Structure formats: C-alpha cells, structure tokens
Image: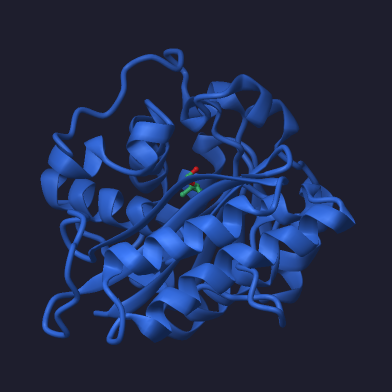
Length: 284
Ligand code: PAF
C-alpha cells in the first residue's frame, strides 16, 4: 500500500500508474477514525475498480462547531493499518495546507436549492459547502472513475450527486448501504465518543427509524413521528434535532405514505455530547 502526504506526490504516482496499469480508479474519501462501515466502502471500491484510493483528512471547513472539530477522533496509524488489511492500494493523508494552499475560503459555488435549506443544512450551516469544497478538491487531485460514499450520510450523498452534475464531473457516485452494530446502531466514527450509558441510549435512534418503516402502512406519518419523538424525549440523554419522513429524492417532507414515492426516514440527535445521524430507506 502506498501512502502519500502531498498533492504533488500522489498526482505524480496516479498519473504514472494510470497510464501504465489501469484506467479504473475507485476513491473512498474519509475523515479517518475508520470502522467496518468505511472498510465496506473499500471492499465495494475493490470490486468495482482496478485501483482503490482512499483519503484520510479531517476537513476543518465542514465543521460548523469548532468543538466538534476539536473532538473529532484522530487515529491515523490505526487507520492506515486497517486500510492495508482491507487491501486498499493508495492512501492520501494530506495536510490542511496541501488541500487548501490558498486558505480555507473560496467555497464551491453550487446551487443546492432545497437540498441546501433542509435537515442537516439547517442544523449545520455551512457544513455542505465545506463538504463540497473538500470533495471537489479531492476529486480534482485523484480523478477517480468511481466515488464511494456511505448511505448513512444520506443528504451528503445527494449534495455530492448534485455537485457532480453541476460540474459535469466524469465520476460515477456509488452509494453503499449503512453498516450497523448487532443492536442496530449505525456505525459511525463518533460512536467511540459515547460512554456506556450513552451507547445504550444511542440505539434508540435506529429503533425509532425502523419502527416508523415497519408501521408506515398502518399509521399516519404524523402519528408515527409524534409517538417516536415522545419515546425518544423520555430519554434525558437524547435531544432530537429532527426526525423526518421525506421524499427520498427531493427531501421534501411527506404527510402521507405512497408506495410509489421514494421515501426515507432521517434522524439527527445529540446523545449526551455526541451528535449522531441515521436514516432508513422505506421505498427507493
Ligand atoms: O463523510 C465523510 O466522512 C466526509 O464528509 C467526507 C466525504 C470524507 C468529506 O470530508
């Protein structure tokens, strides 16, 4: 496995290897603190492409809360070991200066429409602008044929799809299913910040999502959401930011379930000091 820390080095390598060996590059961008969910993206990339490239970069511009950025877990040596074991070919571990040589200003100018005004965009102003900024920069550097993102960040996937469309980027987005712990909690780098009591509470988020999915034919969306919000608010460690049943393509909220409309249920909540998100697709 090759590890590069500068743009110049990785670009030189990718240009050479591209020409000689492969024209199919799969890219898995990460912010490190890897878990089995990330490794499933690497696995998917390996199946689809001849060369698998991953990046480990905690992007400062996508954190609207500086404390969240400072608390983000960093474990680069473990990450590299995990990527090696997963069979990743190339890892890019750049510095902030390498990614943003002209400074962190200069956000990517893509009109996200409603996507940029709902759910995560409301709770985390500037977050998606930072995500687009870093993903655009990484795509320009790596120039992959396939980009692998996890469904857990549902809205992020849609934002990046929109950005790819906006710039007509020659890359295919592959969205991979969320991996879950045995009790249903969505895997996330943030889970390691939960203490044992919070960890018990955290599972209630996915339980609420699956409850809604399973009962959506029998009860109204309003009743389901209201009941699940009551269940969650009974746990004093949980503060729900949103629990929404939406059109899976537009993210507009739905008041009524119809099985011919793509439908996704999304949640964001603080569990203690840790912000978690999750979603389930009811109909795609
Ligand atoms: O999903 C993430 O981990 C990040 O938002 C990403 C796509 C690596 C950009 O920093």
